[in-house]
Image (cartoon, rainbow, N blue to C red; front, side):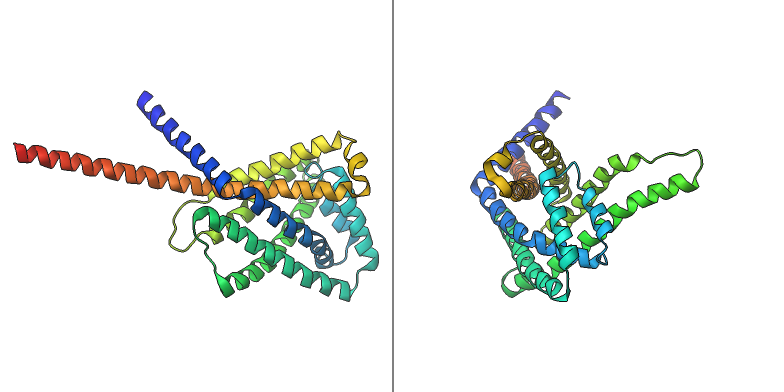
Length: 300
């Protein structure tokens, strides 16, 4: 038992060293800043497009925003609500088309940045050149559809609970959704990240990606919750940034989330590298033992 614990600790120690090596040498902070820039450029056109996809239903859009309460700072949520109100009163076909064009351009650039960052971590990018551009555009469209479906699921969850309360006697789960929505959000984030990591993995690579997806999901939810709580109890940011405080907070939240995404990828790559080292070490030890056995037989 003691020997097993010693081996497990050695594996964990190697993993930590490899993770921090990747973090410091592969410039995760720079990749996160670049991805954050494109996410900010994507965010508001995405709201316009999602609002249109929701049938320009202002009440439905507000219910979707309420699902983010507790994970996003209240000041940022207010900015989002104000922007949705602006879109609701000014939306038209030209605005929607312009938002779609800007969205595809910025979102695809963000996808390429994400693929490039993960490629640096794993030592090789899956898509190159024209294929990288085509993949980034297609993935951006798929991502928008996935986000839309996620909003529908989150909004429908409350309606489903109300339906159960109305039609099943002696059952009251009216307060359950306030807790369940965090689990649903976490599951959605996990599935999206798992897809990102899987698609970034080069053809022929067989390392697992679920560990990094779990790590990044927990990190994003935890950081978002703590960040929202800290900002909610602080009145200093408006004094420093003025009317831009909510936008600055949005960028800070996105930046920390981007770091979590790349750290999740680093977890996957660090585990891959450690397993390769252990396999090579065991192979060398086996070859040494075989050579020693052959030498002993020869002498005998």
